[in-house]
Length: 492
Ligand SMILES: Cc1cc2nc3c(=O)[nH]c(=O)nc-3n(C[C@H](O)[C@H](O)[C@H](O)COP(=O)(O)OP(=O)(O)OC[C@H]3O[C@@H](n4cnc5c(N)ncnc54)[C@H](O)[C@@H]3O)c2cc1C
Image 1 (cartoon, rainbow, N blue to C red):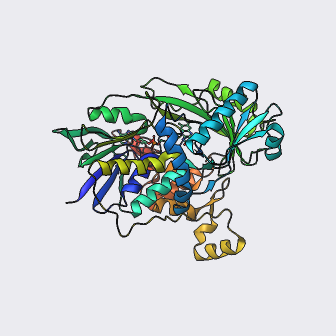
Image 2 (image 1 turned 135 degrees about the horizontal axis):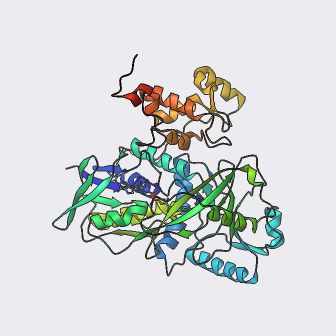
Image 3 (image 1 turned 90 degrees about the horizontal axis):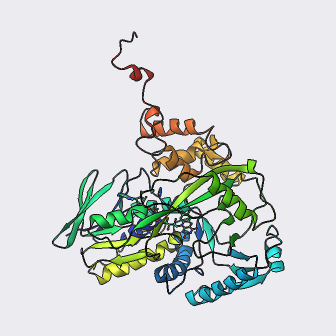
């Protein structure tokens, strides 16, 4: 009999779990996602750091401490297999006072205890020799060479593509409304598109994991949103650090970071603002939040670029669990209910390790499928025109002229790349943006958005007005202008 597992949530955690489970013979894996695309929860709006794992207290938060370090190691392999660009640039935690220096020593000891390799304390001069833009106030830093930066949405899309290649079904715009439990065991999930039967339900619903848990009769934790805001600068704006610059952390957060994204933009953020439990959609930015981020970032470096160089501000919501630690477990009651919840930071770094841990726990609880003989670990990334040498560029364009037609001038994205993104699963303007970066440059889509909508309309065979920015309810229009006058007496 074919066994089925439903994973609720197509974020980096749910998809990592789906990827690992897709390697098992005879197990059908279905991922159910309420949004129109994968990775549009916490996985889309974060700092993108693959933390090395020195800052999580192994006594208070054993899952965070253990899984971040293991996840960091696993990402080196996963990123290669999935063609996800990572800048393994390392991180510096900057100390500006004697109290900060004391904390650095605590972090160093904790990191060694957690198994983080090659940690070292540098003095102020060594730090500025590595990163000349670091403030003269900085007296020491903890150097952690194994930290890296990736694009979190690119990583999530790569995971999704690999899952699909390995037979996983991903149902988007499908809301889980209930978990059916009978005689103490899960039977499946009730969704906005009907019932899906399953022997296992994996709760990886991010901010909503506590609500999914309650649907299964589990109520021993809550999830509250903790907002983090960011400012992103134009690619030409600098100076930009070569390593991730952290302040000395506080007990609440790792603090406002100064980093260069993998795409090459200077980015500063995030702050950490706790919101009420019902504020799970409040992803807006605030004047005070952004001012705080600017102030804190300014303390780490000699100079930030001018404010006119900021091209985008955004915020993300961390799913903060009431107990503080990641909830990674298989429940006895109801049987078949599995949780990867409370995945606050460092959930991105930990995701591959969380997935393997879930597999281990499911095996201990009766999942007895063997591994498939044929399973594809590799995924091929889409072609990027920017950065190709002239020879390759000429060959590519002569084979397919659409790779010579630039659609997004800021990021140098061509029609060929947009079409490829659509064929790989993008259905919306944001879906194209997160796969290709079209619309992420200086003009933020002012010039390319309509062109992309037209390509989406052509490729999907839909009228242009029905193309959405990010799923149902965000259509570009309402239809033919005359439809506005429906019911009225209009002469042709
Ligand atoms: C500001 C900020 C900065 C961060 N920085 C870092 C960092 O640098 N490094 C790091 O390691 N971690 C970082 N994190 C943490 C990291 O982003 C998260 O741990 C990770 O993205 C969590 O992934 P997830 O899959 O659990 O959740 P999500 O990405 O939120 O995925 C959950 C999914 O479930 C879906 N869903 C919810 N309810 C339902 C339902 N009823 N039916 C169907 N689908 C549903 C949601 O739409 C969503 O797509 C940061 C987080 C934030 C917000």
